[in-house]
Image (cartoon, rainbow, N blue to C red; front, side, top):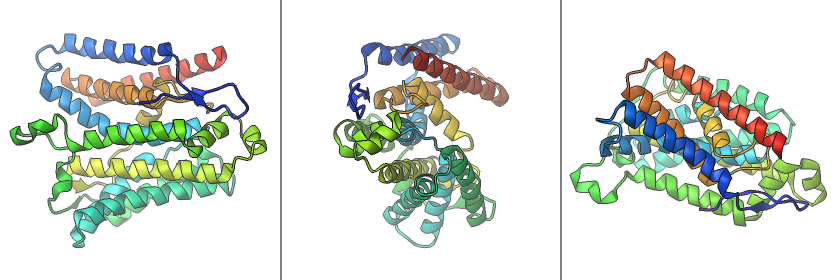
Length: 329
């Protein structure tokens, strides 16, 4: 899986990250994991808990892939948690309306992509600041999800969609991990290849590094931004599908604050909030770190309010590391 960061040429095209930039987040992940293994030796290192961590990291990881693209392009997307919630409601509603699981899943992902496209349109065409545009979408999309669901959970008939992130039984042990985890890894590989080898990937780095230079070099910045936010929305829709698989219902209140976990995962993984710098494998490590933290806090019996404080401190530390990297660059 390729890692990418800016070059020093005019377009700041991507090259491989240094080993130290990957080893830092990886070492942090290992330390946190070992600490929780020490605090809860009887259960945390078990196979069942490792599978749980992988299933939890899939949802965070998918939205973090989209956030990686956005942050590299110099933007931010605060609406992805609401997109995940809306996607679960849409999937459940389509199943209840008699549509098959493939069409229902496609509908959930499409709603995410369209939501991202709307964000991109506000940002690229009307020059709304990404923070404001996506904050508006966060509120509007959450409201739409609650309205469609009549402010309650939406039950849906059981289909194979519910097995995507289900715990494996003995008959499916050959898969090693649930199908949803494999799908996440496939998407991560595709994003890494896109960022490193495609024209869109080069344009994403160019826009994030220096918009004016990108324009002078012939990059269609507006089109690139539309693609960036549409892809982010599509990944949030896909994460919504995984969330539906876990919950087996459409829940308009789910994934509140998920955007903060995604931002933390991306920054921990080596991306810069200034844009022009990011790493897919770093993002995966960051997503795993957030999943390990949540699973570990639950295992040792920390109250929810303490977990929220810990998560907030992790995000603050990630922002501090980003500022230090920017000063040293």
